[in-house]
Amino acid sequence: MVTLRTILLVEDNPDDEALAIRALRRGKIVNNIQVARNGEEALRILLGVDPLPTVVLLDLKLPKIDGLEVLRQIRTQERTRRLPVVVLTSSSEDRDIVESYSLGANSYVRKPIEFDQFTEAVHQLGLYWGLLNEPFPPNF
Image (tube, rainbow, N blue to C red; front, side, top):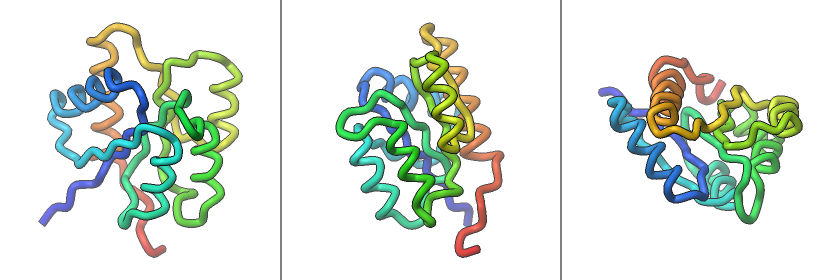
């Protein structure tokens, strides 16, 4: 039996959330998708779920706890420090890119403005991280 790996989407904008989920489903990505709508909720999920999601798609501009702080806390916890985190944000500011990579982001993807480009970008992320990439073995 194949167990589908979960993708955690951390996104506070309902339109971007809906587009991302639609893009994954349109691209035939059938992984479970869990959504956190702020940084506090994302950390609560990550510290409480087992198994961990296969990847976190993380927006930077979040309420309660911003995405950079979420990433910082992910990387300081033994349980989550190897968890793949893809920053998926509208920010193209150099300081956000540098800080994201400095904190251990696995990838930084700027959200395209056009629907078709956004759909394709999210589809490719879901395909690679949700299906192709081999996650770090649990309990290793």
